[in-house]
Image (cartoon, rainbow, N blue to C red; front, side):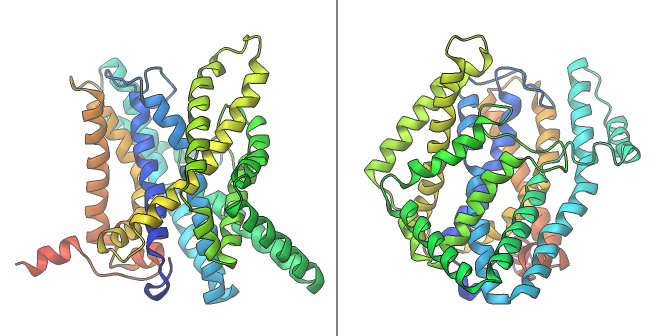
Length: 403
């Protein structure tokens, strides 16, 4: 988190958007029209949900890693290496370890509740007991069943970036040449009409070797998934390079008719081809997958750029609401998944349209998490860990001042 004097308001909003979109993404999974192995499948489903899941999953974490790279270099330049390393371990490493021990058993119990609900025999106490009993199986399944993999990959990518930076920096001439090449490539990708299309090629290459059509979720092992690491690492490094000359972010986020056309075409083709994944005997399966991974990558890059562009246009000014949500978004994303799963189980049998239940799950998750954040996180040591410093309460602060 940048200090108040150096905060970039629209990028604060972008980061909050990426994390909040993740909450809606997870909340929508129980409303898929086919069973995907999620904790529960709702009695009401929507045909549009798979489209939302496909599109939102294509860019939300890439957007997060790009902004993380931008702010990481900004923090390094401002604080120096020692303080930067300390802050990364405190703000990323500690939530990863502590969150795993608190959240994983709650998630496991949510999955158990989902299975129980299908049999019509829900036992919350037994589900919780079974969830916490999974500690006894460690280290087996150490990394299975949580959404905190993104912190693990953020730590890995940050460490690799600093390692390469340090090795290159040993040689003054190599460092100068490397910086000049990176600056030239970054500027070309951000400015050129063909830049995002060319940047999609290496991403498409990584996608080709993934297990699924689209981005894999590396939540099964501590052994890094190299293709996933390369994609997220690439966006992180790109954000890092953008921060070297911040005006390049303006180039990347430029909204234009050409980029809109590229986005719409890529999105339509990607959605149209998505169902071919379930037809491995299709005569042109490999060829169509090749088209899919390229259009998926094009859609990814253009959605990332468009998201930044829209926030730069409409939120490039101080806003107490945006800043509050930006501060809270990290906490919201860390704690949301157990709440989402438990709420999905609770509403699964309700005789209501799926869209109403999706709204209930999302609003209840964000609302409850915000209340906890404001009451016991924002102004305490936990707030210092997550936000870089303690901040005054807003919701309960106003309530207290009104008494």
